Image 1 (cartoon, chains in turn purple, yellow):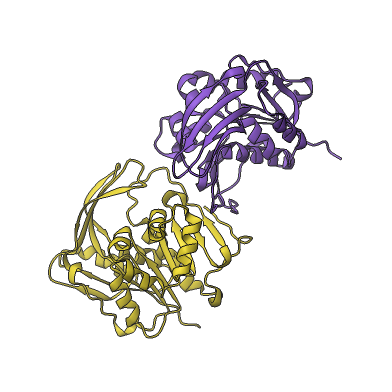
Image 2: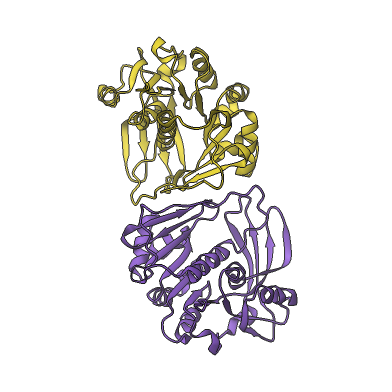
Length: 273
Length: 273
């Protein structure tokens, strides 16, 4: 039997204070790496890299361990866990950040356990581009597939470093606004084309309740609608969970032609809500 | 050989003054019935009901005739054609109406030619609900499939009459805002459910560049993404053209089970951009 492909993810592990039109929770487990891992773990072995403080709930650690997420790369530090507080607008498609406390994340310097370094799949969730680069360089050789997420903040204040990471990844997953901001474009098709010139052969545009678009080589396109829900409580982490399912499925299937990225022809493009 | 199903459409025929971020045209042929007919005509015989004034361009009449749209039900009247002037916002997903001149449309009283009255497919494009009802009642018996479009104006000022029409149609095609406004809902899934209780067994929600959702019996759902374009010049009539293709395809195919509307199960739902 072939060994299973392993998937390393580096990103935030957080305690969120989330306010939505439907609910408010002051101590909610969050962070891109957590959402990503919980979505990916049912599909393939996941190895998490991150940092928490002493206030991070033991129950959340137990949940991650219960899902068989490898936590050898999760540093436990003095001080408090990264905390984010945000409020969603009425339609839940947009939100305002009310507070951000980096806490232990401020001086985080990721150290990859030896058991992580040969993994073939790597996802650099949304953190400082310099840390993303640092993790990529600790891998033994180039992983078979590297995915990347980022946000408006890094596009603004760490643009050059972000371009350096972009040049070395296969897949970028961002939302519409980030894609347009990154390329100074007003049109998504042209933005995706420009991003592909910066490195990643596959660009996945996340559109919230409208699903996702995947742009690939030779203007290929795959559209996946999102299943509409009749009661949305809290959309936090939806994009990270999506990325987790996306990367883990590829790690499990691992059957695409490596020379052409994730190419899917227009003809074969199809989607099921 | 089986006779082809005919499709009757009633709606506006207009001269538009369109301003978009990419172009401005002062004398642009428009109107829901025109866009609908031009999209539907390649798929099935189309019979148009509407009214124009003496300023309606002869070239547009020639285009409709060239597409083999039956214009026996197009009344030519003294006075000027219905005129609309609008300006699109930067992202082209929304627009402001700058001027509306009803002109000959003000006293329009649709009269269906005898040759239209036995057609099996009928689309009531966006006009006053009382005129939609009038056309429906001129048909000989109930057509096999009746589609309906409407807008915020009629939801506001002709609500009761609109409910009367809704109770007698099979398919409603509206955009997200209209669906929410019509049902006083904030969630699309719940809005579609409520609309189905008002009459139409199939509710098609048009989402502009995000495609369309089709809600049917037993919470069935079909999602069709839209093909993203790298250069959008003028989106006027996109929804009407979509409805034209939708209705005409059904008129041509005419193979769905009539007892269950356009039921498509969740399992079989699929979409191609």
